[in-house]
Amino acid sequence: MRRFVALAHLVLLSALFAMAPASVTAQVAPSMAGRSTVYAPQGAAATSQPLASTTALEILQRGGNAIDAAVAAAAVLNVVEPHMTGMGGDMFAILWSADEQRLVGLDASGRAGSLISPQVLRERGFESMPGSGPEAVTVPGALSGWVALLERYGTLSLAEALAPAIRLAEEGFPVTPIIARQWRAQREKLSRDPGASATYLIDGEGPEAGEWRTNRDLAATFRAVAVEGPGAFYGGELGRRVVDGLRELGGFLTLDDLRSHEARWVDPISADFRGYTVWELPPAGQGVAALQMLKLLEPFDLEGMGHNSAAYLHHLIEAKKLAYADLRRYVADPDYMEVTAEDLLADGYVEARRMLIDPSHAAERPDPGRAVTESETIYLSVADKDGNMVSFINSVFGYFGSGIVVPGTGLMLQNRGAGFTLEDGHPNQVAAGKRPFHTIIPGFVTKDGSPWMAFGLMGGAMQPQGHVQMLVNLMVFGMDIQQSIDAARFRHINGMRVALESPIGPEVRAALEAMGHELVDESGVAFGGAQGVIKLERGWAAGSDPRKDGMAVGH
Image (tube, rainbow, N blue to C red; front, side, top):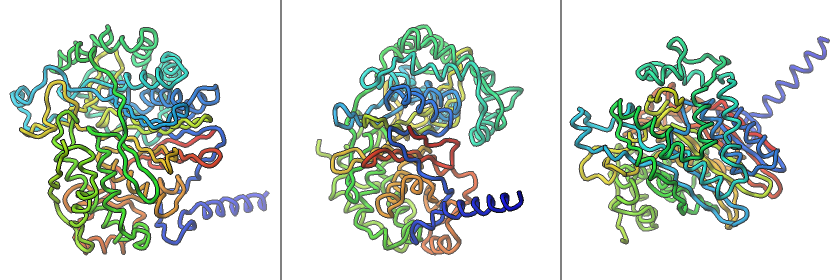
């Protein structure tokens, strides 16, 4: 028996050492974890919570396609990861349709209510956009996106796709550790609203890891939508309850705002990088910043600098600053933008911006360029046996969104209005019927015109800089999908302030400080949560972020 235990210990230690990413290549810096990439012959899914991943897998195993599985998983995440996502938020997707052999984009974001204006907000004492509360609520677009995907590309009905979420909401589930910690940290916010408190707190507290939770009000909401269709919310009795409840609290939505909402099919935008084409959705999302960063970085010898070296991190941080300066100045509802995404990605414009990167010194706050015009969140990836691939993101923005639940609905409403500004003359200034600047961005990669990867990384302003770090890990340093997710990240906050994950060591930190970067305490900084699925010559590879509770699964 002792010999068996000793042998087992030896096998375990050997496995642990074998999983260390440093063994892959001498240039790869230490990472956050050592999960293995999931390989599968028929299909794969990666989400931020195990019950959502297994839901997607079950849908695939029963003959559903990637679109069915993505929508069902998103609904489950509304139940099990409610502080991040739900029907009360917005969603976006990039989809490779195997039948059509093309890439399509979906923008299911909502607009500001008809009753809002900068003047009325200022009259209420706001000097900037409210970050939570009824004033921050915009039309929830997620349900319209779920329906649009299923109707055009799915094989399941809406009722069938919602069934797993309804069952979990009614019967309950054990809360996973990271979600439990984040949920409990929001008890003060939840306690401000009676509906939110009644739905998400018990005796004023959020759940402990493993604690059983239900949301029967949300189950009833999903069931109404399953029976009556999306019209139950977009103009029906359910929508009326939400609008009336918000109005009592000072919200700006009307039933006509819900009734007139519709998701939009859009053409993704792209940039080439190291033999691949990276795709993002057009504004009002921030995906253009990821593409601009990649174009800024394209000529630099990143591989020669070494992964997560001081020189490498410095160049990525400086590229991020330039791209985000343009993002803040120009990106808004495309109907109000002064320039186009294509203007910001034009070769001559990017080259001029690149000249501003000083290889030895950090810039504090770069100004936006003079573009010339020619005229918080879940992410999941799913692929199926037919070759469909979905890059899918759904969010209520901040933790528990607006903090508002209209009693009896179980539905957390987003605070996406916080994405607007009150600045007069800015293209993103709040206005009735206008879409706010959006942080959530699904990503996709093709190679030689064929689908290669559906990927994404949630986390507010972390998303474009996280996309770029993940892509460079794959395309420059040759990591596999899981290693690219596990690798330690930076997050530029603002000005000279940068956070580095703990595996990045003291020598690199000292060198960055010598360049002028101000390193902040990384504890409490969110470095995002990534998921991804890659198409192989035969089969699929999938990875899931150890910074979240989720997992990748294969079929």
